[in-house]
Image (cartoon, rainbow, N blue to C red; front, side, top):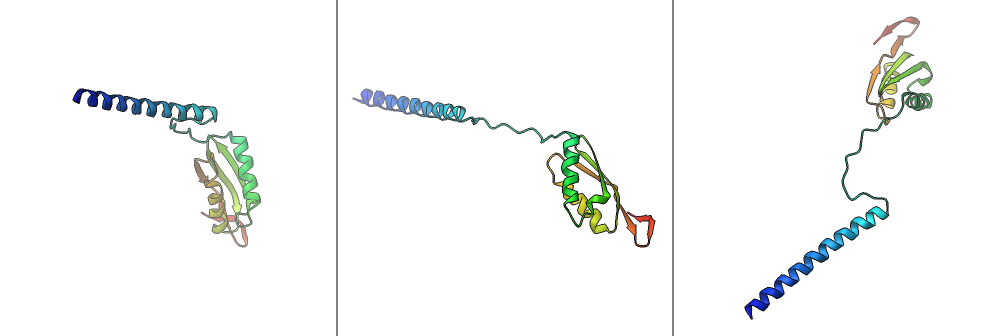
Amino acid sequence: MRRSIKSLCLCFAAAALALGVAGCERDRRDDRLAGRSSLHVESAPYTIDDATLVTQLRDKLSASATAEGKAVSVRASDGVVTLTGRVSSSVARESAAGLVQNVPGVNEVDNQIIVAQLGNRHSSIQ
């Protein structure tokens, strides 16, 4: 009798294990059919070509009143963005850098924008 109870328990355990594995396999198959991956894969860093990035950044700066975007030039090389130009205030200078800093594809911002002093077009403060 003990032997048959042990055998019965082993059969139930084997059946439960088989059903669990089959259920997992079904979930993976459903994921594959739905275009989902059941494996967690680290995504690669977001990359974008420099010309497209510069166009996006110019559009963003031009739309901003505080960044004086029309006075700012933008260059990009492998995600490193360089801002140059002359603006009227440190608020405009920092606003321009802040606008481009969080754009996908921007890895670093080199803010070379010059703040022009009132009344003197050629002097600057950085």
